[in-house]
Length: 593
Image 1 (cartoon, rainbow, N blue to C red):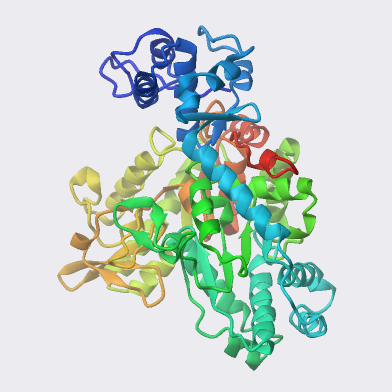
Image 2: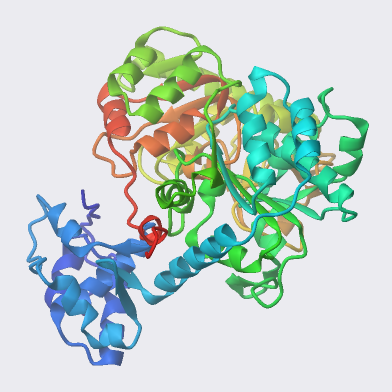
């Protein structure tokens, strides 16, 4: 299905008013935006390429990257264009015509394996493949097998830890491991035990290990650090284990690599200035884009262990690529199944939430609908046309906002932060009746009515006690990172923003630029976080954002309760529709690829 945009505004910024030929046709139909058209037009002018179908192909490659794909399969795109009445070029030979064009000869675009890439993504995908293959084919690290087996049996005792024991033991014997599993399968427990195993091995070799814990967002990094420390408090971890791993902290990937002012894709650490660490653990790898994975792999020393942790069933990065999913499939198909350690037994979820997550992973539409209709208090389906049910949703959301407001008004920073993390309202869209912007305003109106005060942007009160906030960009000077959350708290006559992080760092509102209200958030931005209760707003069935990966990611943010607001038709569409991203990494990981 091709996603189209529509407008009745002749001055819409997405319209390229000077476009001609196929570019104009596809722009006015809502397939291409003005940016896609302008890039293709300028590239054609610079290379002397005049052919309409070749310029269209370049614009479609730009569109693909904008929508999260690394490349575009032109014949497949035409095949999925049923119902889009446009003068599509003949798919026969279209890719070959692009490959023979000046645009390809001058490396604006590349064609490989029948896929059309912009040059940057072609290079990055090839680099990721080359660096991974080099790591996989290198001689394995040396370990004391007897000590490793003995310590693994202590840290992962009995059948209950068999999966984690096998995964950690395998990871200790190789340079690169992809550790996968859904929420509650024990990924962090495995990581903590693995780090204890490796630290002991390093001590035996007279080389204390330098360990880095990292994740794509600040929130995910904080959760990783907290979870690893919590796992070490278990009785099976000895005092020596804890001493070896004492003081571990986690950071964002951008901070680990060394942020450079003025660049979001180049870092202090690179192929000529490697990271010093002996072990690097990356959590929430599903959120890592192709570009960021390329920068990480080039910065890791060949003799350092790299552990990529994540859930391949979750949403991929908001930027181009589906790296974790590609690695899981590509490495197994390459014959490197030992490099992929999958945890399948769920320990966190009980009952309906775990069953719902499993049904979503399996794509079992009937099972999902049955679970939502079964009446279990931990899983609920609310029809948006049911006024009484929606009134209960309003009451719950308002009560939560009021509780946070009262704690913040009383100056209770810890209480306000704790309360704010108990409930999340998740949306697929940013705009529209089921989008974040609408529901943030809606909850603010309900909160204002409940407390008898004009609160929120609609009243010009952007800053108010109890406003939950989301950091949307890294600020290295302040130590704030994209994905951090917090609450505005009353301190005497002033307001302060308290961040949900160790030590509850506090800032004056005037110091914060990239901040959004967090009564509601997108499912994408919720990755790497958890909440006690989650309310998921599903859009109409024809929404292109409504996919199984989005629904699964939203459901698995909850610890104790999931409430889905949507029709059975929206639920069915979400379960049956997969998030499709065109990439070539899986194919390029094949022998000879």
